Each structure stands twice: as C-alpha cells, then as structure tokens.
Image (cartoon, rainbow, N blue to C red; front, side):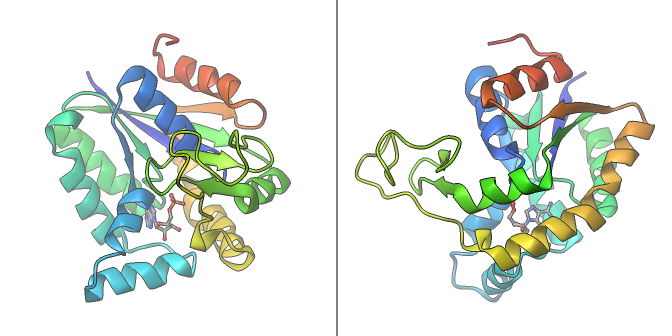
Length: 219
Ligand code: AMP
C-alpha cells in the first residue's frame, strides 16, 4: 500500500529542507501547504488578501480551505503512489480530514516527529533565507550559501527572508505549534504510526534517520 508521509515539527524544525531532500533523492512528491499558500497570496483577490493577512500574523488558515487545497493537489497524477506532506496536518481536525482522504486514496499514513529544542528553533528561524527562484533553503548559521546572500544555483538572485520569520510572528507560530499541532504527536503515537527523529545536528544525519523511519533505502 502506498504511503502518505507526514512530517510534523515546529516552524524551523527543518521539515522543508528534509522534504526537499526526500523529493530529490527518492522522487517522492513534496506537498507543502505553506508553499502553496505563499504562492496563492500573490494574487489580487479577496481570498489571497485574507491568506496574506493570516500568514503575516503567524496564524493558521482555516481547516476547510487547507483541506480543499490538499485534496486538490494530492488528486494529481504525481501523487498516485507515495507522497509527502510538509506542514499538514497542523490541527486535530485536519488530521481527521486526512484520515478520510487516505482511506479514499487507499493509502496508509506514516508520521515523523522532527524534534528540535526551542532555542535552536529561534536561531534557525531568524537565520533562515531562501531563494525566490528555486526555493532552496539556507541558514546563515548552519547552512550558509557559498557566497553571502546569494543562491548557490542562481548567482544573480539575492536570498530573501520570509515575512513571517520576524520575532513577533515566530512567537505566535511557535505557540500555535504547541497548542494546535503538538496534540497530533499523541494522536499518531497512540495509533502506532509515529516515528521520532532528533532534528538537531547535521541535516544529512537527520535525513538518514527519516529515511530509516519511513522504510526507504538510503539514496
Ligand atoms: P510553513 O511554511 O509550513 O511554516 O507555513 C507558513 C504559514 O502558512 C503558516 O504560518 C500558516 O499561516 C499557513 N499554513 C501552512 N500550512 C498550514 C496548515 N496545515 N493549516 C493552516 N495554515 C497553514
């Protein structure tokens, strides 16, 4: 049976980096609800403005809109086998909605808890930079680009700092993780579908731990 891999971790836990590695090395499509919302917010529609305001404040988009987006995206051909969700589900309601979707799609769910302590999360979030062209994620402390401020793959592109990586919305996002998303760890653990991975340290080591946890070979 194909799998839906769910990466759970606080903002800054490195889910995005790991999801991209799994996509590159194992061909597993990476569906990031955060990336989809970041793209959506650029349109000039009332919905886009609402998404933009909610994200800038560090709050969660409604469960129903998020579910619709995930359902639509995962119904495409590239998700007919294993796929990976980065940043979804983030609430118990979303986890229940995902159970229904997994049943419909005939897939099992494998959740991975990427655990990083709070001080390290703050450092990572405030140091995070990304390339607007390819989406590559860097960190000024732990994964700097070869040339300061510039993408390794797009030398003409200056790296950007996410609007919601400022101190105020980082605080709200971490608090939201504690109240809304942490209960998902118990939810998946109680049903025997949770693997725990230490998300601190070298990203290649974390990658190997995730690959082992979800039962992929080490590419
Ligand atoms: P991320 O890039 O995963 O940190 O997501 C950035 C922002 O997108 C979040 O702070 C939320 O505003 C929104 N978002 C992403 N995923 C979800 C989700 N599963 N449920 C609700 N809002 C989400």
